[in-house]
Length: 358
Image (cartoon, rainbow, N blue to C red; front, side, top):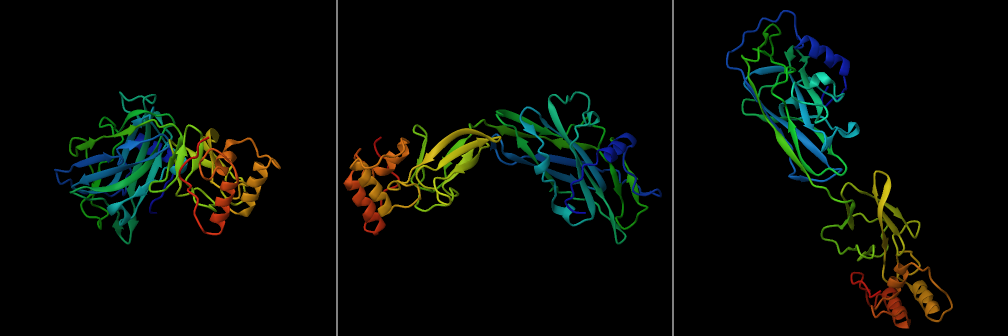
C-alpha cells in the first residue's frame, strides 16, 4: 500500500523488542562485505514562523538491497511538534515504484529515545518502511547515489522562536540492517551487525522566528493596511472575499464580519484569529461606500447629502466618515456626493488607495 500512514504502536513495540522483522524463515543470503547507508535529514525553508509546517525529508544512500528501514527522528520539543492531522507521511523516489509499507509511530514511546536524549528536550517520530512481496519480487531500496525517499511534516509551535534540531541519533538500537542478494530470490535475505553495516546521519536545523499574528498586503496588490488606525483600504468595489488582497501571518487565520451579506464593504470587520481567538481586528473602508454594500452609487450620494444637511446621522465608527470624505479635504459635503455620482456614471474613478485626513 503506497503512502500509507498507520500508527501501529503495538506492532512496532514488538519489532523493537525482538529485533528486525524476519521476511522469511529460510533466509540464507550472504553479506557482500562493504554494505553501508548514509541518511541526510533535510528541512527546506530557511526561516519558518509559528504555525508553519516544516517538511522533513530523508535522503538515503545505500549500496545494498534493503528490505526494510527504520529510523527514530528526534526534534527539538520547544520549537517543533507533531500535528497528527497534518503529518503528511509520503514515499518518494524509488519507494513509489517498489512494493512496501511506510508507517509512522508518533506515540513518543520511551524506548524510542537512546541514552542521552530526553523526552523533555526532544519529540520523536519512528519512521519504518518494510518491503512486501509482489509477483515473486520483494520490494527493496537500493540507491548508491542517494535519493529523497521519505518525507513528513512537523509544525512550528505557537510563539516558537529559535533554532531547532532535527536528527536521527546514531546511538539508537532501533535501526534495521536487513538486505537480500536478489529481490527475486526469497532465500537470499540476510541480516548484518552494526559493525558490518555502518550507518551515518547528517542532521538538519529549523530556524523559527516569532511573528505576531497579523495581516500583510497581498504581494502586488494595492491593499493598504493602516495598523495605527486598524483600517484596510485600497480595495476594489464589489469584493466577496479578501483573497488575493490580504495575507495572514504569524500562524493567523481570517474571519470576516461583513457589512453586507455577500460583499466586503465599508464597515466589514476583519478579525485576525489565533487558535480560535480574536488577536486583533481591522475595519474595511471603501471610499464612497457609505451604506456598506461594497459599491459607490446614488444611494451613497443621497446618504451623504442627508448627512450634510443634518437630516440623518451615521454610526459613530470613523470608517464611515473616512469613506464619505471622497476628495480628502477633511469635510463631508456635496462635492464628495458629486464625485460619488461621477463614479457611478463612470465619469471618474475614486482613488481607493490614499487615506483621507481624519
